[in-house]
Image (cartoon, rainbow, N blue to C red; front, side, top):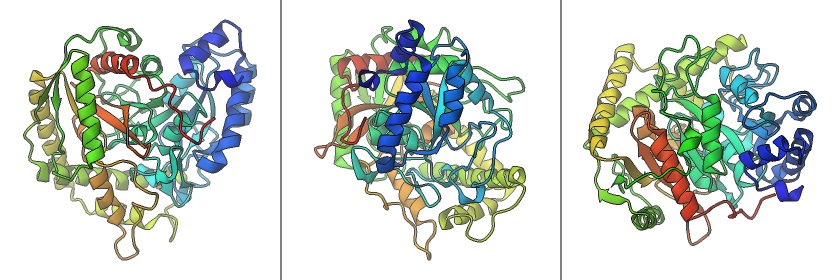
Length: 474
Protein backbone atom coordinates (compact mmCIF):
# COMPACT_ATOMS: atom_id res chain seq x y z
CA UNK A 1 0.00 0.00 0.00
CA UNK A 2 2.89 2.39 0.59
CA UNK A 3 3.50 2.34 -3.17
CA UNK A 4 0.15 4.12 -3.57
CA UNK A 5 1.06 7.11 -1.41
CA UNK A 6 2.47 9.37 -4.13
CA UNK A 7 0.20 8.37 -7.00
CA UNK A 8 -2.09 11.12 -8.19
CA UNK A 9 -5.88 10.82 -7.96
CA UNK A 10 -6.24 9.80 -11.61
CA UNK A 11 -3.89 6.85 -11.12
CA UNK A 12 -5.64 5.79 -7.90
CA UNK A 13 -9.03 5.93 -9.61
CA UNK A 14 -7.67 3.71 -12.40
CA UNK A 15 -6.62 1.13 -9.79
CA UNK A 16 -10.10 1.17 -8.28
CA UNK A 17 -11.68 0.88 -11.72
CA UNK A 18 -9.56 -2.17 -12.54
CA UNK A 19 -10.22 -3.69 -9.10
CA UNK A 20 -6.58 -3.69 -8.06
CA UNK A 21 -7.50 -1.80 -4.92
CA UNK A 22 -10.80 -1.05 -3.19
CA UNK A 23 -12.19 2.32 -2.06
CA UNK A 24 -12.11 1.06 1.54
CA UNK A 25 -8.41 0.26 1.25
CA UNK A 26 -7.66 3.73 -0.10
CA UNK A 27 -9.68 5.35 2.69
CA UNK A 28 -7.90 3.34 5.40
CA UNK A 29 -4.52 4.15 3.86
CA UNK A 30 -5.34 7.89 3.84
CA UNK A 31 -6.59 7.77 7.42
CA UNK A 32 -3.38 6.04 8.53
CA UNK A 33 -1.27 8.74 6.87
CA UNK A 34 -3.34 11.52 8.44
CA UNK A 35 -3.15 9.94 11.88
CA UNK A 36 0.61 9.52 11.59
CA UNK A 37 1.56 12.94 10.23
CA UNK A 38 -1.20 15.35 11.20
CA UNK A 39 0.00 15.83 14.82
CA UNK A 40 3.14 17.46 13.40
CA UNK A 41 1.30 19.46 10.72
CA UNK A 42 -2.23 20.32 11.90
CA UNK A 43 -3.57 20.23 8.35
CA UNK A 44 -6.74 18.22 9.05
CA UNK A 45 -8.91 19.81 11.73
CA UNK A 46 -12.10 17.73 11.47
CA UNK A 47 -11.78 14.00 10.72
CA UNK A 48 -14.76 12.50 8.89
CA UNK A 49 -13.42 8.98 8.95
CA UNK A 50 -16.59 7.08 9.78
CA UNK A 51 -18.57 8.94 7.16
CA UNK A 52 -15.94 8.03 4.55
CA UNK A 53 -15.73 4.41 5.72
CA UNK A 54 -19.48 3.99 5.52
CA UNK A 55 -19.68 5.49 2.03
CA UNK A 56 -16.74 3.41 0.81
CA UNK A 57 -18.68 0.22 1.57
CA UNK A 58 -21.68 1.31 -0.52
CA UNK A 59 -22.00 1.37 -4.30
CA UNK A 60 -20.29 4.60 -5.40
CA UNK A 61 -21.06 6.88 -8.33
CA UNK A 62 -19.03 5.93 -11.39
CA UNK A 63 -17.10 9.16 -11.85
CA UNK A 64 -13.55 10.12 -12.76
CA UNK A 65 -12.37 9.71 -9.14
CA UNK A 66 -14.44 6.85 -7.78
CA UNK A 67 -13.03 5.67 -4.45
CA UNK A 68 -10.32 8.35 -4.10
CA UNK A 69 -9.94 10.09 -0.69
CA UNK A 70 -10.39 13.87 -0.62
CA UNK A 71 -10.31 16.71 1.90
CA UNK A 72 -12.58 19.77 2.02
CA UNK A 73 -11.54 23.14 3.43
CA UNK A 74 -13.51 24.26 6.50
CA UNK A 75 -14.85 27.26 4.56
CA UNK A 76 -17.44 27.50 1.78
CA UNK A 77 -18.15 23.92 0.60
CA UNK A 78 -20.63 22.70 3.21
CA UNK A 79 -21.34 19.10 4.19
CA UNK A 80 -24.69 18.46 5.83
CA UNK A 81 -24.43 17.27 9.42
CA UNK A 82 -20.83 18.38 9.95
CA UNK A 83 -19.22 21.31 11.75
CA UNK A 84 -18.59 24.30 9.51
CA UNK A 85 -16.38 26.64 11.52
CA UNK A 86 -14.86 29.00 8.92
CA UNK A 87 -11.84 28.87 11.21
CA UNK A 88 -13.69 30.75 13.95
CA UNK A 89 -14.42 30.00 17.58
CA UNK A 90 -17.71 31.80 17.00
CA UNK A 91 -18.87 28.93 14.76
CA UNK A 92 -17.38 26.07 16.77
CA UNK A 93 -20.84 24.55 17.29
CA UNK A 94 -22.39 25.46 13.94
CA UNK A 95 -23.52 22.37 11.98
CA UNK A 96 -24.26 22.64 8.26
CA UNK A 97 -27.82 21.76 7.35
CA UNK A 98 -27.24 21.11 3.64
CA UNK A 99 -24.62 20.07 1.14
CA UNK A 100 -23.35 22.77 -1.16
CA UNK A 101 -23.70 22.12 -4.88
CA UNK A 102 -19.92 21.80 -5.13
CA UNK A 103 -19.92 19.08 -2.44
CA UNK A 104 -22.62 17.22 -4.37
CA UNK A 105 -20.55 17.39 -7.55
CA UNK A 106 -17.40 16.27 -5.75
CA UNK A 107 -19.19 13.22 -4.40
CA UNK A 108 -20.88 12.51 -7.74
CA UNK A 109 -17.33 12.36 -9.13
CA UNK A 110 -16.84 9.42 -6.74
CA UNK A 111 -14.68 11.16 -4.15
CA UNK A 112 -14.70 10.06 -0.51
CA UNK A 113 -14.33 13.02 1.87
CA UNK A 114 -12.20 11.93 4.83
CA UNK A 115 -11.98 15.26 6.65
CA UNK A 116 -11.82 19.04 6.65
CA UNK A 117 -8.68 21.16 6.43
CA UNK A 118 -7.28 24.05 8.42
CA UNK A 119 -7.98 27.68 7.53
CA UNK A 120 -7.53 31.08 9.22
CA UNK A 121 -10.57 32.83 10.63
CA UNK A 122 -12.98 33.74 7.80
CA UNK A 123 -10.11 33.09 5.36
CA UNK A 124 -8.86 36.66 5.73
CA UNK A 125 -5.11 36.14 6.02
CA UNK A 126 -2.63 34.48 3.60
CA UNK A 127 -1.34 32.31 6.44
CA UNK A 128 -3.05 29.47 8.29
CA UNK A 129 -2.44 30.01 11.99
CA UNK A 130 -5.76 31.05 13.50
CA UNK A 131 -6.39 30.99 17.23
CA UNK A 132 -9.28 28.52 17.04
CA UNK A 133 -7.81 25.86 14.75
CA UNK A 134 -4.14 26.54 15.53
CA UNK A 135 -1.12 26.93 13.23
CA UNK A 136 -0.78 24.72 10.17
CA UNK A 137 2.91 23.94 9.67
CA UNK A 138 4.75 23.85 6.38
CA UNK A 139 6.09 20.32 5.75
CA UNK A 140 9.24 21.77 4.09
CA UNK A 141 10.04 23.69 7.29
CA UNK A 142 7.56 23.52 10.20
CA UNK A 143 8.71 26.90 11.50
CA UNK A 144 7.37 28.53 8.29
CA UNK A 145 3.89 29.45 7.12
CA UNK A 146 1.98 27.06 4.89
CA UNK A 147 0.30 30.03 3.25
CA UNK A 148 -3.42 30.66 3.36
CA UNK A 149 -6.18 30.65 3.46
CA UNK A 150 -6.16 27.11 2.00
CA UNK A 151 -3.05 26.25 3.99
CA UNK A 152 -4.39 22.97 5.34
CA UNK A 153 -5.11 21.80 1.81
CA UNK A 154 -1.65 22.75 0.58
CA UNK A 155 0.05 20.92 3.44
CA UNK A 156 -2.14 17.82 3.05
CA UNK A 157 -1.26 17.49 -0.64
CA UNK A 158 2.45 18.32 -0.21
CA UNK A 159 2.88 15.85 2.66
CA UNK A 160 1.08 13.03 0.85
CA UNK A 161 -2.02 12.80 3.05
CA UNK A 162 -4.27 12.93 -0.03
CA UNK A 163 -3.51 13.48 -3.73
CA UNK A 164 -5.62 16.64 -3.93
CA UNK A 165 -7.79 18.82 -1.72
CA UNK A 166 -10.46 21.52 -1.99
CA UNK A 167 -9.51 25.19 -1.70
CA UNK A 168 -11.06 28.62 -2.04
CA UNK A 169 -9.48 31.75 -3.51
CA UNK A 170 -10.57 35.34 -2.83
CA UNK A 171 -7.18 37.04 -3.11
CA UNK A 172 -4.83 34.17 -3.81
CA UNK A 173 -5.89 31.57 -1.23
CA UNK A 174 -5.32 28.59 -3.56
CA UNK A 175 -2.18 29.93 -5.24
CA UNK A 176 -0.48 31.23 -2.07
CA UNK A 177 -0.33 27.86 -0.26
CA UNK A 178 0.46 26.15 -3.58
CA UNK A 179 3.58 28.31 -3.77
CA UNK A 180 4.48 27.90 -0.08
CA UNK A 181 4.00 24.12 -0.14
CA UNK A 182 5.36 23.27 -3.59
CA UNK A 183 2.18 21.95 -5.24
CA UNK A 184 0.04 22.94 -8.23
CA UNK A 185 -2.78 25.41 -7.57
CA UNK A 186 -5.25 26.71 -10.13
CA UNK A 187 -7.77 29.49 -9.53
CA UNK A 188 -10.52 29.04 -12.15
CA UNK A 189 -12.38 31.76 -14.00
CA UNK A 190 -15.02 33.62 -12.01
CA UNK A 191 -18.24 31.55 -11.86
CA UNK A 192 -16.60 28.47 -13.37
CA UNK A 193 -17.68 26.46 -10.31
CA UNK A 194 -21.06 26.95 -8.59
CA UNK A 195 -21.37 28.55 -5.15
CA UNK A 196 -24.98 27.55 -4.43
CA UNK A 197 -27.40 26.90 -3.06
CA UNK A 198 -26.59 29.29 -0.22
CA UNK A 199 -24.54 31.71 -2.32
CA UNK A 200 -24.69 33.05 -5.85
CA UNK A 201 -21.85 35.51 -5.67
CA UNK A 202 -19.25 36.04 -2.95
CA UNK A 203 -17.73 39.50 -2.43
CA UNK A 204 -18.81 40.71 -5.88
CA UNK A 205 -17.11 37.82 -7.64
CA UNK A 206 -13.73 37.91 -5.92
CA UNK A 207 -14.10 34.41 -4.44
CA UNK A 208 -13.95 31.13 -6.36
CA UNK A 209 -13.45 27.47 -5.40
CA UNK A 210 -11.36 24.65 -6.83
CA UNK A 211 -8.41 22.61 -5.51
CA UNK A 212 -4.71 22.17 -4.85
CA UNK A 213 -3.33 19.12 -6.63
CA UNK A 214 -0.26 16.96 -7.07
CA UNK A 215 -0.65 16.75 -10.85
CA UNK A 216 -1.95 19.02 -13.60
CA UNK A 217 -4.24 16.31 -14.98
CA UNK A 218 -5.99 15.93 -11.62
CA UNK A 219 -6.76 19.65 -11.56
CA UNK A 220 -8.15 19.55 -15.09
CA UNK A 221 -10.24 16.41 -14.57
CA UNK A 222 -11.63 17.71 -11.28
CA UNK A 223 -12.63 21.00 -12.91
CA UNK A 224 -14.40 19.01 -15.64
CA UNK A 225 -16.34 17.19 -12.92
CA UNK A 226 -17.38 20.25 -10.91
CA UNK A 227 -17.66 23.16 -13.34
CA UNK A 228 -20.72 24.51 -15.11
CA UNK A 229 -23.60 26.72 -14.02
CA UNK A 230 -26.12 25.64 -11.42
CA UNK A 231 -29.81 26.46 -11.59
CA UNK A 232 -30.35 30.06 -10.50
CA UNK A 233 -26.73 31.18 -10.76
CA UNK A 234 -26.53 34.96 -11.33
CA UNK A 235 -23.95 34.53 -14.12
CA UNK A 236 -21.69 31.85 -15.58
CA UNK A 237 -18.19 31.55 -17.01
CA UNK A 238 -17.83 31.07 -20.78
CA UNK A 239 -18.16 27.35 -21.57
CA UNK A 240 -14.91 25.62 -22.56
CA UNK A 241 -14.45 24.47 -26.14
CA UNK A 242 -13.79 20.92 -24.94
CA UNK A 243 -13.07 19.12 -21.63
CA UNK A 244 -10.17 20.60 -19.71
CA UNK A 245 -8.54 17.18 -19.43
CA UNK A 246 -8.08 17.15 -23.21
CA UNK A 247 -5.91 20.28 -22.88
CA UNK A 248 -3.40 18.38 -20.74
CA UNK A 249 -0.75 17.22 -23.17
CA UNK A 250 -2.09 19.35 -26.03
CA UNK A 251 0.45 21.56 -27.79
CA UNK A 252 0.20 25.09 -26.37
CA UNK A 253 1.84 26.51 -29.49
CA UNK A 254 4.27 29.42 -29.27
CA UNK A 255 2.90 31.60 -26.47
CA UNK A 256 3.58 35.31 -26.07
CA UNK A 257 4.00 35.94 -22.36
CA UNK A 258 4.21 39.30 -20.61
CA UNK A 259 6.68 39.15 -17.72
CA UNK A 260 5.79 41.42 -14.80
CA UNK A 261 8.52 41.25 -12.17
CA UNK A 262 7.28 44.12 -10.01
CA UNK A 263 3.75 44.35 -8.57
CA UNK A 264 1.45 47.28 -9.41
CA UNK A 265 1.83 48.47 -5.80
CA UNK A 266 5.64 48.71 -6.10
CA UNK A 267 6.03 46.42 -3.10
CA UNK A 268 9.63 45.15 -2.81
CA UNK A 269 10.14 41.63 -4.15
CA UNK A 270 12.63 39.23 -2.57
CA UNK A 271 15.57 38.35 -4.85
CA UNK A 272 14.71 34.65 -4.52
CA UNK A 273 11.26 35.28 -6.01
CA UNK A 274 12.77 37.32 -8.84
CA UNK A 275 15.24 34.49 -9.44
CA UNK A 276 12.26 32.12 -9.74
CA UNK A 277 10.80 34.34 -12.47
CA UNK A 278 14.13 34.45 -14.30
CA UNK A 279 14.34 30.67 -14.04
CA UNK A 280 10.82 30.31 -15.45
CA UNK A 281 11.65 32.69 -18.32
CA UNK A 282 14.68 30.56 -19.24
CA UNK A 283 12.59 27.41 -19.20
CA UNK A 284 9.83 29.02 -21.26
CA UNK A 285 12.40 30.13 -23.81
CA UNK A 286 13.76 26.59 -24.06
CA UNK A 287 10.21 25.41 -24.72
CA UNK A 288 9.85 27.89 -27.59
CA UNK A 289 7.76 30.62 -25.98
CA UNK A 290 8.33 34.37 -26.32
CA UNK A 291 8.71 36.31 -23.04
CA UNK A 292 8.45 40.11 -23.08
CA UNK A 293 8.95 42.47 -20.13
CA UNK A 294 5.60 44.30 -20.01
CA UNK A 295 2.87 45.27 -17.56
CA UNK A 296 -0.57 46.90 -17.80
CA UNK A 297 -0.84 50.56 -16.82
CA UNK A 298 -3.02 50.77 -13.71
CA UNK A 299 -4.00 53.37 -11.13
CA UNK A 300 -2.55 51.19 -8.42
CA UNK A 301 -3.43 53.38 -5.44
CA UNK A 302 -7.12 53.52 -6.33
CA UNK A 303 -7.16 49.87 -7.31
CA UNK A 304 -5.69 48.83 -3.96
CA UNK A 305 -8.11 51.04 -2.03
CA UNK A 306 -11.05 49.68 -3.99
CA UNK A 307 -9.97 46.07 -3.48
CA UNK A 308 -9.59 46.56 0.28
CA UNK A 309 -12.99 48.28 0.51
CA UNK A 310 -14.74 45.44 -1.31
CA UNK A 311 -12.78 42.73 0.51
CA UNK A 312 -13.46 44.23 3.96
CA UNK A 313 -17.13 44.85 3.21
CA UNK A 314 -17.37 41.26 1.99
CA UNK A 315 -15.94 40.00 5.28
CA UNK A 316 -18.47 42.09 7.21
CA UNK A 317 -21.33 40.82 5.06
CA UNK A 318 -20.08 37.26 5.38
CA UNK A 319 -20.03 37.49 9.16
CA UNK A 320 -23.57 38.91 9.19
CA UNK A 321 -24.74 35.99 7.06
CA UNK A 322 -23.01 33.47 9.29
CA UNK A 323 -24.52 35.07 12.40
CA UNK A 324 -27.95 34.75 10.80
CA UNK A 325 -27.64 31.04 9.98
CA UNK A 326 -25.91 30.29 13.30
CA UNK A 327 -28.73 31.97 15.20
CA UNK A 328 -26.70 34.44 17.24
CA UNK A 329 -24.07 37.16 17.11
CA UNK A 330 -20.45 36.79 18.25
CA UNK A 331 -19.86 37.36 21.94
CA UNK A 332 -16.84 39.14 23.38
CA UNK A 333 -13.77 37.09 22.53
CA UNK A 334 -15.48 34.97 19.88
CA UNK A 335 -13.54 36.72 17.11
CA UNK A 336 -9.82 37.30 16.83
CA UNK A 337 -8.83 40.98 17.23
CA UNK A 338 -7.74 41.23 13.58
CA UNK A 339 -11.04 39.75 12.36
CA UNK A 340 -13.09 42.04 14.57
CA UNK A 341 -11.15 45.11 13.41
CA UNK A 342 -11.34 44.06 9.74
CA UNK A 343 -15.09 43.47 9.96
CA UNK A 344 -15.55 46.89 11.58
CA UNK A 345 -13.55 48.41 8.74
CA UNK A 346 -15.90 46.69 6.31
CA UNK A 347 -18.98 47.92 8.12
CA UNK A 348 -17.65 51.46 7.85
CA UNK A 349 -17.53 51.33 4.02
CA UNK A 350 -20.46 53.51 2.81
CA UNK A 351 -22.73 51.80 0.28
CA UNK A 352 -21.99 54.42 -2.45
CA UNK A 353 -18.27 53.85 -1.91
CA UNK A 354 -18.77 50.08 -2.13
CA UNK A 355 -20.51 50.38 -5.49
CA UNK A 356 -17.94 52.87 -6.77
CA UNK A 357 -15.16 50.51 -5.67
CA UNK A 358 -16.74 47.66 -7.65
CA UNK A 359 -16.99 49.95 -10.65
CA UNK A 360 -13.33 50.94 -10.35
CA UNK A 361 -12.24 47.31 -10.10
CA UNK A 362 -14.27 46.59 -13.23
CA UNK A 363 -12.47 49.44 -14.99
CA UNK A 364 -9.13 47.95 -13.96
CA UNK A 365 -10.27 44.55 -15.24
CA UNK A 366 -11.04 46.10 -18.64
CA UNK A 367 -7.61 47.70 -18.82
CA UNK A 368 -5.96 44.36 -18.11
CA UNK A 369 -8.21 42.62 -20.65
CA UNK A 370 -7.18 45.16 -23.31
CA UNK A 371 -3.53 44.66 -22.35
CA UNK A 372 -3.91 40.90 -22.79
CA UNK A 373 -5.11 41.24 -26.36
CA UNK A 374 -1.39 41.25 -27.22
CA UNK A 375 -0.35 38.51 -24.79
CA UNK A 376 -1.49 34.95 -24.12
CA UNK A 377 -0.38 35.01 -20.49
CA UNK A 378 1.12 37.21 -17.79
CA UNK A 379 3.96 35.74 -15.70
CA UNK A 380 4.67 37.14 -12.21
CA UNK A 381 6.11 35.82 -8.96
CA UNK A 382 3.33 34.11 -7.03
CA UNK A 383 4.49 35.85 -3.86
CA UNK A 384 6.83 38.71 -3.00
CA UNK A 385 8.91 36.55 -0.65
CA UNK A 386 9.51 32.90 0.26
CA UNK A 387 7.36 31.43 3.07
CA UNK A 388 8.04 33.62 6.14
CA UNK A 389 8.22 32.28 9.70
CA UNK A 390 5.03 31.49 11.59
CA UNK A 391 4.01 34.55 13.59
CA UNK A 392 4.97 36.98 10.83
CA UNK A 393 1.34 38.04 10.43
CA UNK A 394 0.56 38.48 14.12
CA UNK A 395 -1.10 41.71 15.22
CA UNK A 396 -0.65 43.62 18.43
CA UNK A 397 -3.51 44.67 20.74
CA UNK A 398 -2.81 48.30 19.87
CA UNK A 399 -2.68 47.64 16.13
CA UNK A 400 -5.06 44.74 15.36
CA UNK A 401 -4.83 45.26 11.59
CA UNK A 402 -1.01 45.00 11.47
CA UNK A 403 -1.25 41.41 10.21
CA UNK A 404 -3.48 42.44 7.32
CA UNK A 405 -1.12 45.20 6.16
CA UNK A 406 1.79 42.76 6.47
CA UNK A 407 -0.20 40.33 4.32
CA UNK A 408 -0.59 42.94 1.59
CA UNK A 409 3.20 43.12 1.19
CA UNK A 410 3.39 39.32 0.97
CA UNK A 411 0.72 38.90 -1.74
CA UNK A 412 0.81 41.88 -4.13
CA UNK A 413 0.39 39.78 -7.30
CA UNK A 414 -2.34 37.20 -6.66
CA UNK A 415 -5.34 39.53 -6.00
CA UNK A 416 -5.18 40.87 -9.57
CA UNK A 417 -6.80 37.71 -10.96
CA UNK A 418 -9.55 37.92 -8.35
CA UNK A 419 -10.54 41.46 -9.22
CA UNK A 420 -10.52 40.65 -12.96
CA UNK A 421 -12.06 37.19 -12.70
CA UNK A 422 -9.24 35.73 -14.81
CA UNK A 423 -7.99 32.17 -14.30
CA UNK A 424 -4.51 31.91 -12.81
CA UNK A 425 -2.16 29.25 -11.51
CA UNK A 426 0.91 28.78 -9.33
CA UNK A 427 3.32 26.19 -10.73
CA UNK A 428 6.02 24.66 -8.44
CA UNK A 429 9.12 25.22 -10.56
CA UNK A 430 11.70 26.69 -8.18
CA UNK A 431 13.27 26.29 -4.73
CA UNK A 432 15.37 28.63 -2.62
CA UNK A 433 18.89 27.71 -1.57
CA UNK A 434 17.37 26.82 1.82
CA UNK A 435 15.03 24.31 0.19
CA UNK A 436 11.79 26.31 0.34
CA UNK A 437 9.42 26.12 -2.64
CA UNK A 438 8.59 29.20 -4.74
CA UNK A 439 5.77 29.17 -7.27
CA UNK A 440 5.66 30.77 -10.71
CA UNK A 441 2.38 32.60 -11.29
CA UNK A 442 0.58 32.73 -14.63
CA UNK A 443 -2.64 34.59 -15.50
CA UNK A 444 -4.64 33.86 -18.66
CA UNK A 445 -7.43 35.69 -20.45
CA UNK A 446 -10.92 35.50 -18.95
CA UNK A 447 -12.36 32.03 -19.53
CA UNK A 448 -9.10 30.59 -20.87
CA UNK A 449 -8.11 27.84 -18.45
CA UNK A 450 -7.27 25.81 -21.56
CA UNK A 451 -4.03 27.73 -22.19
CA UNK A 452 -3.04 27.39 -18.53
CA UNK A 453 -3.56 23.63 -18.54
CA UNK A 454 -1.64 23.20 -21.79
CA UNK A 455 1.34 25.18 -20.52
CA UNK A 456 1.22 23.65 -17.04
CA UNK A 457 1.36 20.15 -18.48
CA UNK A 458 4.30 21.17 -20.68
CA UNK A 459 6.13 22.62 -17.66
CA UNK A 460 5.33 19.52 -15.59
CA UNK A 461 6.84 17.30 -18.29
CA UNK A 462 9.91 19.51 -18.69
CA UNK A 463 10.58 19.84 -14.97
CA UNK A 464 8.66 17.15 -13.05
CA UNK A 465 7.81 17.91 -9.45
CA UNK A 466 5.93 14.73 -8.49
CA UNK A 467 8.99 13.10 -6.88
CA UNK A 468 9.99 16.12 -4.78
CA UNK A 469 8.76 15.39 -1.26
CA UNK A 470 9.17 17.54 1.88
CA UNK A 471 11.00 16.35 5.01
CA UNK A 472 7.67 15.79 6.79
CA UNK A 473 5.83 13.48 4.40
CA UNK A 474 4.14 10.13 4.12
